[in-house]
Figure (cartoon, helix red, strand yellow):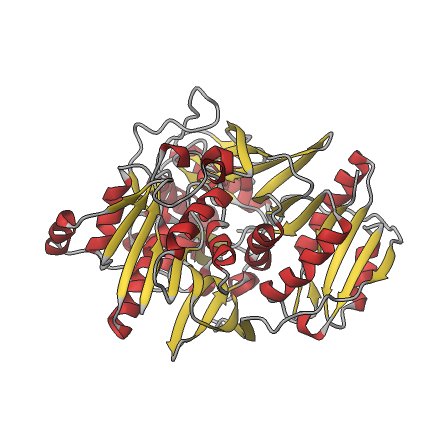
Length: 262
Length: 297
């Protein structure tokens, strides 16, 4: 089974203070650490599990600057076979549509039965690229996938809906699935596999290599644009309780009592 | 200017809340721009929803077809693309839900209409649309503009807009369904997630934890606090993914919420009613003590 996994290198912002840069349209990035996007990591693991079952190749694709090689190498160490990085300064500031356009163009040239992506990117949260790639490739898709079963080229997949409900869909491959976190337990790579991955070549493809027009990628190919970034209104609703742990605990206990919780 | 469209969302015989939230916002935008609001209802045997939609919209476009009975993004897209081509709405709102996320990017790509996803606000200025969406887990708001285009698409985050009643009597227009191919993706069934031992939806008090607890060993401490409040322990998604607590303990957000986070700008304070900026490992033990004191004395 030939599987393509789309990966994104994202800043880890969960525990970091985020500041807007001087352009007002991006964040200050120099102190941030980067890692593979969380749900992409699950997509990668699912691909490796399917490869272990059916044989075949897992090809990793990512659009990003040279630093992205680090993320791709980690993907190779975790079981990817081939890695391709798409980059050109004319890809910078691509929105969801432009990103999907570039990725789809690269994937179209590959042999694949499945394309797996994460269900959402933790940085921009667009939830758009995977399904757009499927539309551009003209293949069926399923989103928020929690379970994948494949038999004789027919995939039966479970998608997570709101309120714990699951939708079961069936389709022929090739197909694209956006993978939800929790579908599997992503492995940690061994030191040996990390070492081996360091030696692997990562192919890079530019705008010209992909045969794309400059007008279809980057800011020019984007259909949406960030005008400005602002911190969300802080504590719009929350009444912040101030003071030492004893003080806030006492106040909170009073609130619980007032509300009849105790 | 042309219509604003809202795509109604329903599942298993129920209209979903996001529909009314979008209609309320759509009504506000339509009045602001002086254009009609149209609700688009696709389904099979869903006439009863049309009237409800008509109390918000000037027009309800109803497309009834057996193949539209259960949501399938392929058939929905195939039915919507010709409708949008024909009616040329200025802006179409779709829920940023499992349903909307599944269909909106396909519709955007097939009909070549720019899309902004997961919007928490939408504003129209002359003939342009601006969306506000949250990035970096809600740490920043991004104002987004669209390229100039004849039509725009936006998916709207649930619970972003309060709901109002309008009591209008819009016209219900039955519209023929375009010829639908057998979709490549076949919907088989809905499956309920297995019910667990604890039903957090029935609990009066929920003490929920997220990634901030750092390790699984902290759970008993929090569970004790939950018990002293007569509540149950629940958690956010990453805790479920890590396998520390079962899926049925994952929380939504409603009721009175007290948040503890060490970052003053943590997005959770925008959702909570009370906030404590501090270290939960210091606050929890003293809180438990205070509650015990109050109970005993």
